[in-house]
Image 1 (cartoon, helix red, strand yellow):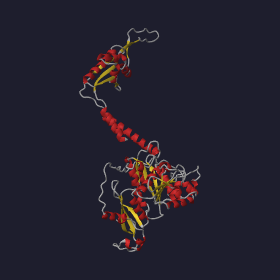
Image 2 (spheres, rainbow, N blue to C red; image 1 turned 90 degrees about the vertical axis):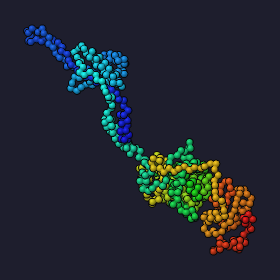
Image 3 (cartoon, one colour; image 1 turned 60 degrees about the vertical axis):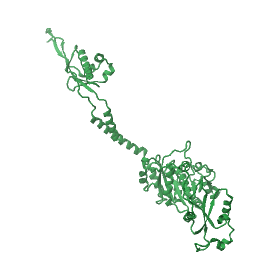
Length: 541
């Protein structure tokens, strides 16, 4: 603010118009006036000779006289100007402790300045030709040689003073009224741990408060890439998906309301499912549930149904358009009816049952400072994401939320900052591009390449492979082969190559029948293989 004020003062000084000044000085003195004859005593005869008494002139009054119509109008008419324009460039100053007027006229042309200065001086002198006051020209109007510019020093000093006052006042106002998170670094200092991810600002669909997850609505945008970045940063905290019935529970909350926790929970769940995880997104905000609106599903049955013991987990799971992602809505609720259940042992039993159906459980809860629900859920969660909104979350609310969570969590809180401008330290990823009209090019699908791919993705213990080529989805031969492999001890592993313009190729890996099979052993020679139904000719080929 100070720098800006000084720069503005300098700019105003340099842009101020400069002109030529013609200066003249006029002495104002009193004339001697006759007073009444004096008498001495009651019987003395009056003197007949008058007494001359000087009258002290008032210089302030004389300045007003010089600026009056009686003087200005004749001077303006002499130079062909109107009164307003003539007075605009005229300055009359009173010299301290002296009966002297200093008349200065400023004009763009030095000759014009002297002509106009002489006009006002002569008009004033002529006006004072009679009367008690006499005006004498001490110095004639000068002919200036150089233009006069505005002094720089006073302007810079005024800019410095104004800038300091404005800067101090603005800082005090921001510290007392705004108090919001000032950026990524500030959020890290408040929480004491690195910010897991930042999400830039993005527009939601018109007429919606939340809208569909941006990773589905606009998957190539920087915001969608930021949520994928959040998923990548969170992956080390998740248990491997190969471990059965040991799901990771991630709680998404925020210090206050309307600070992005539901949006973050929905987008995180989608990105985790897109990465191959089995995810259940639970709407644990029983006061203001939103997830059923986000995914366009029914919210009649859900978490409250499980808390009441009226249904099982599979009965309340709602499918979404994202493979691997299911949603448990909040369910039917009356005002405050199920709130106390979130603080009961029933909640722990429900979450334990939900964990048996997915790899990752994402909980969308109420705000930490709005209700005690988030504290109860945090005690049952493996990881907590504390979402802060750059435009709404105050620094004090972050401190209070951390104090509330400190009783039940231990080093498993990670901050996430949303709606962050790049100037506030946001890491804004580049938007992904999807070229159109260009067919993807891939290397030939040789047998060696297929074997290598199958070995990379096959489950442990698989040693033999068979290969199936499917040309069309409704191919009868393909259906026969699929039925054959469904009756055998095989695991179908999709190869990640291929495109919509080529055949889809799968590598089918057969589980070993012996504890120590020989690499050259033909699985058809084993007793188990002989008992299996005859495979189709296409499969043998």
